[in-house]
Image (cartoon, rainbow, N blue to C red):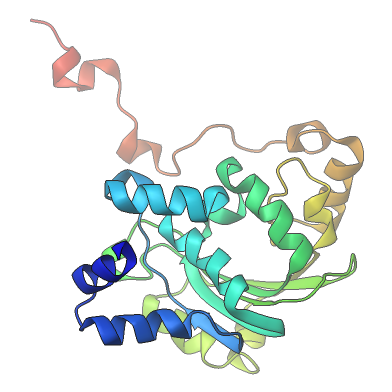
Length: 239
């Protein structure tokens, strides 16, 4: 009764069409591609927070991560998954448990870092496009990664459409062994880090600063724009 009511209330179509959509999500597919909604749990309603916390506890921080988990559920063995999402799930500690289990069950084949300003309604988010395969990964599986954040929005998507041509000519692809990520604390997915650096950190079980020189410390990336002295903030100034 409650599911039916929710279906009628929260779909723009009728209840029959809504249930047909739910039925499709019960199947298994060879290829699943999506650009899911980006919605932090701080912006979710109470019902949605409760649902994702129970159904997808390891990805409940953001709705897009729940969709990545759902994609795996509906993708057939050795099927292909493609998704365009913020890159937070790859490194944030809040997704560490999800990453650790996901990396053991799937192979991340290709990742393109699109950077900011990829979508008009998500200008400040760092977006990435990923292609993965639902299969047991091998320790020597390689991830091919490309950085496209230096291009304009039009150039980025034009480049992505020509994976076999312009992409390899215009950019320098990185190839990293997926198994190394699981040896790091929190299993961060770092496709642009060098093999040697990742291996050194994994072997020493240390921070990156212990095995490499940190060129820049804490930095906003544009301090002149974002950092202010105390006397530049009116609310902190006294007469």
